[in-house]
Image (tube, rainbow, N blue to C red):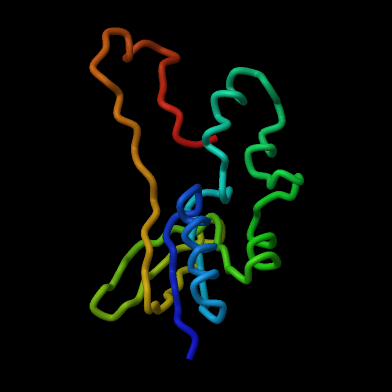
Length: 143
């Protein structure tokens, strides 16, 4: 029976974990859940986008050859199911099951797992520097 691996988070670490899981187990059933609409956003490119070095936001979502890393890409390239706009609302570790909500349709669901990987990232911490409360000052977490 194929091992079921669930990954919560799909920005940077999630896709890396999914790809590593695929290399470690070719038969695993891998599902990645991402609350937002985008997968594998190249956050290291944010300063260049904000700075005007390029104006096509999709460049932050593409492979070096220009292919957008969307759910279809992950399925076709790696056999990984990716659910975007889907929030994991509960983790039941005793029964190895998650519950989720499709944020576009409001449809609820659940899925069992053998392995759970949480890659939800971090929250920016604004340092106590004078002026950080001025209008126009913000942290950059996503695009």
